[in-house]
Image 1 (cartoon, rainbow, N blue to C red):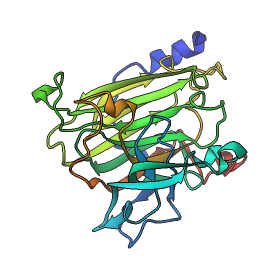
Image 2 (image 1 turned 90 degrees about the vertical axis):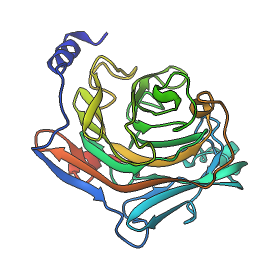
Image 3 (image 1 turned 180 degrees about the vertical axis):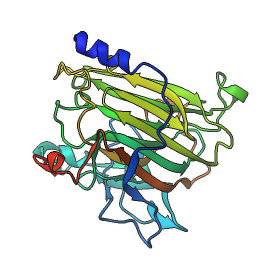
Image 4 (image 1 turned 180 degrees about the horizontal axis):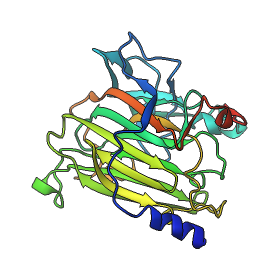
Length: 313
């Protein structure tokens, strides 16, 4: 039950809205115009965990998997065996997991702003070119800077963009090939009490061309955009958390940004023609720029005192 406050908030924000053009100021960006990835803005997750989805890559900090090329960030997935930590850093404080290792058949990269930049509300846009092929799973998404409402997914997850198997035969897709992108929220309780809700839309041609993937995140409302067009909206009442009765929760706290290219995993391998096509590697996800705006009425970044106090970096 979201209560009267939640119903009022949802009703007030139910009208269609376009992506904002005025009243926003740029608070963070990366144009990738330096010689190397900016360590003041990005960190790397390094593990062979598989994302909890049985993905088939090890994430590394090797420049062969992520580097700046001609003013663009390029995340490259390679077909090569690699061995590394079997669990993510957040789980390696457990002595039973600290020294465990795993071996995977692909390498890739996952860049995060965790501990460096996080935002509550705003307009986030990423200009990117996505890879194609069965088993490819590029993603632009956000996780909470701290688990304020509890373990995943009680504290939420915001998927700005996911795409799997672009360009692959797809019986239910326009033109008979996979051309869909996804925008999704994860919420509810801690796993396995988690829930999710999302939408799909067809990606305009060319599938292997540049597109701008975005999110307009206000209190009690989230709009997903592609090339400036709103294609999905969720409002308070569409989501919840078991840890709070506030209708805006858990999407009322600072979240950091993640860019990654996964290979395989449940979503990718269950769609298209199934599994992972091992041909055609390396695969590349290219990012031209990342920009974050906020309005004067609401929104806080990780440089604001009210947000940084109490953080656990």
